[in-house]
Length: 253
Ligand code: ZN
Ligand code: FE
Image (cartoon, rainbow, N blue to C red; front, side):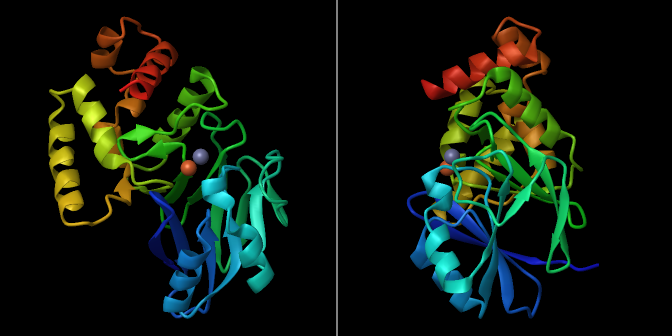
């Protein structure tokens, strides 16, 4: 089976962009390009053109380089059919739609919460997820447009993907996420171990992304809103209510 290479590259202050490219190919796919200089650099390093651009949502730190890249490479922009604020997509995709680029399959998952028209891209053949600003390592995106109900439902969809799924998210926020997570669940031993690894990565200036879904299920409090520990902490058995309180607590942390 075809296994693409995923190249992570930094953009702006703390964003990540991704280049998806088959081995030896000279055509690739960019995810959420916002930093033109860095996008051109990663393409040049890999001797590659950006034939396609995948967008998760409309925030500037995920789309700012789209027009310039399009002018240069005539890239085909892929985005959610209902997101009116992203640059006009050439390929408008629906929730649960499966499409193919360079023999790589992508499944669209509508994940409202951070924005209402946010989508994730899941690659079912290799269990890779591009989660944008929905799920972060040990955290989740700020709830700008959604409600706890839709955000929790979106996270629950991600939780149902295969455990071995590798997650590539939109930001390097892991260290601050870990501090918050430990403050509300200090006895979680998996989290303690993960926190140690995160600190080590930071110390050696290495990214903490990608991360595995199985680790997020064990350590990320925002995926554990139905867990007894958080039901007690937030005095509710309703995961939506727990999520709402946890998200608010993180905003004020
Ligand atoms: Zn965003
Ligand atoms: Fe963002």
